[in-house]
Each structure stands twice: as structure tokens, then as C-alpha cells.
Length: 186
Image 1: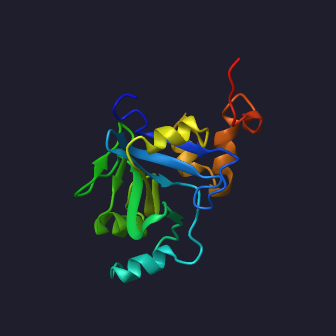
Image 2: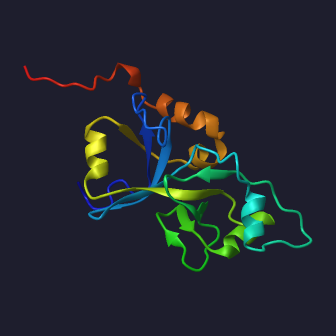
Image 3: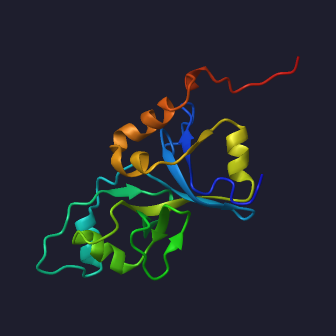
């Protein structure tokens, strides 16, 4: 597998994947190389903690109204750590550019800008992330746990979270429920 092969792609959890952390998940891959992979679940909302709670913890605020922003469960690791997947119309200190369209930032400035409507046009705030050891993700793909697809801003930022998985599945020209997990030899 070529270096950075899945960087900038989306993983679509197969219907048989029962792990609650990833069941019916769409995962955007920010980095994939010989050291493993890292990404964010982009279709699972956090219901018990709000953006307003997040910015109050960092004393971001003032006279301007705070925009209602959805927080996402980026993954099972470091769930108190925040990341913003965003379009490249804004860059911040420590911004990691993923490709010609998207970047990841985790500065307080981007949270402040998003809160007051001055952030990147497209953004998705995630707490936590998903990570795979070397060859672990490749083995999960071989095991048919994930489908891999190209990413679009429409899927990541414009499609309602509860529709992302089905929409991504529908892009394939076959019924994923007909994929057999067992193989044989003739």
C-alpha cells in the first residue's frame, strides 16, 4: 500500500460492524502512513455536551451571540481533546493541511472564530479521534469491516449527520448487504 494512500478518504462502516463506537460510522481519514492511521467519525453527535459548554471551559465569550454548533464524537481516543476539520479558507497556528481542500486545527482561536461566525466556511468540531496501529486499518479493510470512498464537502459538511452513512453507502453501485464475509477456494 502506498504511503498516505487513505489520507483524505472516508471509511464507511459495513452493516455487519457491531462495535458501538463505529457502528454505521463515516470516518474521515486525516493521516495514513507507515505508522498507522488517524481520523474522525463525522456522523455521530455528542448529545450530552454542547459547544457552549466547550467554549465556556476556555473562557471564550463576550457580548456577541454564540452560534449553535454541533459537537461530534470524533472517536474513542482522548475524548476531551477537541479538533476542527475545516475548509482551507482559514488557517491557524498549528493547522495541519490534509489536502488541497481540508485541514485540521485545534487552536482556541478557531473555536472563538467559529463561535462568533468568523471561522472557516465549512467546519466540523470533534471531541476525540480514531486511530489505527500500522497495518491494523489495512487488515480491517481486508476483513470487509470498511468500505473506502472519496470525500466530498457535501457529505462531510452539508449532509445531516443521521443521513451521512446511508448516503455514503448509496454511492456504491451494489447492495452492501450482499457482501459475504467468508471466502473460499475453487
